[in-house]
Amino acid sequence: MKRSVRLVAIGMIAVVAIAACSSDKKATTTTGSSSSSSAPKPTVTIGAQDFGESEILTEIYKQGLAAKGFTVNTQKLGGFRDLEVKAFDGGTINFAPEYAASMLEFLNQKKGEATGDVGATVDKLQTYLDGKDLQALDASDAVDTNALVVTKATADSLGLKTLSDLASKGADLKLGGPADCETNPFCIPGLKKTYGVDLAPKFKALETGQVAAALDAKQIDVALLFSTDSRIKSKGYVLLEDDKHLLAADNVVPVVTTALGSNTELVDIVNAVSAKLTTSGLIELNEKYDVEKADASTVAAGFLKDNGLG
Image (cartoon, rainbow, N blue to C red):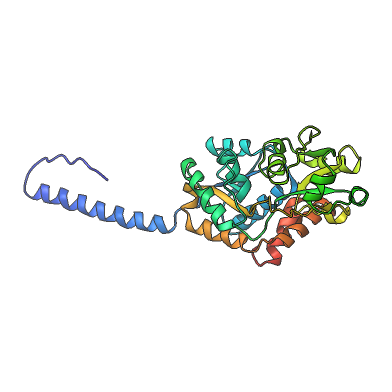
């Protein structure tokens, strides 16, 4: 702290003034050190996209941080990643549960840099996050990637078990999924590049929550869901095997602003939560939400309690 001292006289007055200034500076230093150790926790605002799993993950991280004294708010976003990135850019949010490969391919404008190696994928993702003052925390073991499914009747009728089967026997089928499937490298472009099948001509763009219903109603023949969607099991859908390894490491990974990431207590809490997330566990959480109709906050509270994090 800079001070301006007016010297009214010399000698003793100057000594007193200097001593006072020195004493004040020392006190300030001590106070600063104390406030550093007891600095107020930053307020966290988590962006949630409009599908159940994102709501569940948002609640898990929210409640996990709140249990440790952080003030946490949530901000509902639309279903597309560009809205999330704009929210980060505008300071509306400073935290979002993300998916490594998909976030990377969004930021790199579909360069195809994501791989099945989660470490390499997250490392590459960070190179793009750096330019946006964002930081990826530890990736979880929970993987939620795109999944192409058909009804059992369709699978039996056409003999579909794999995506190669779809390419050779189901090129005329109508695919339904979120609108970004048309540009997502792990959807229509990836199917064309890896499997040689173009499902774009009959593609039907749907809201995320409408896809399974459209499949049940026979409005579409093939549905783009997520691999952790509990309805694949509960409804008896046939998950077509990705036999040529199109899909990459879409592990759940929290993305935060670098300012938030500088708080070591927050990072430790978030990483501890992520360490408990698994693919099978995420399917169970989704089942409670989608099938049992439990709300996201209840599902999250149960997860945290079961894992000693609540």
